[in-house]
Length: 342
Image (tube, helix red, strand yellow):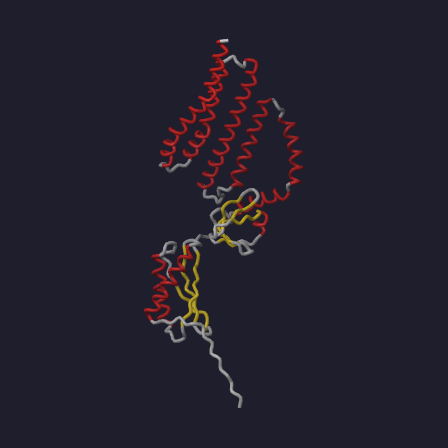
């Protein structure tokens, strides 16, 4: 009996102790390692530390179970099964941590090579599925399950699943096609042919998520996105022309109007956040309207959303400067001539 009590006590102590030791190490040592890793230019060390941070708690927990299993005879008749269970648990945990590590390493390699293959859900999920598949094969081998018949059964069932999930697979391959074409990635500001526009948040295995400027989400099936006409405001670069229509009275000296307008635009380009500082604004007269001579002022923003602040500041500054210079922005006027009967 005393031996049984000792065996029971060993399991009671060893089972949670490993988890507590792993938790302590993760909360004390790994924050210091992450802090040092962030100071280096190489991102691989961050990925390696993340890998071990995911493994440390399960590792010490399994060590605790192994100590109880090795030094206790409480479950002697179940030791072979316990050993197999520990091995299967190790494979599962290592597969889970490795899937995150491999996905991150491949992303770092692709970015270093300058490829436009962004960190999207569809990409990381495919990598994880492949890693999990290898892990499942190892688990089957440990459990003594024949792999060849299982793969044959999976192939037959996979064909049936593929027929049942045609729409899902269509969206999956449409998402992969968009990424491979390198015309769309998270962070791009786009406009769809139905008028919806916003920032691409993510390209998942089924849908592309777009966040509109109003901070609401637009969810578009990948197959619909791939078949739509999409205007990408980020390609070939993020800069955008900002056209601002202005009208002045017919009595205005157009040379003075052009000079004053360019001076105001130049000041805006140099001072407003998001404006392209070295861009020289220009004016293009285009219309003799009913009550004014109309023209466009062409400014330039460094990204799509900055144009709103640029427009805002330019209109205020131009209105103030026109008042000082005596340049009139006329109200809409229409003159009607009445013909008298003889």
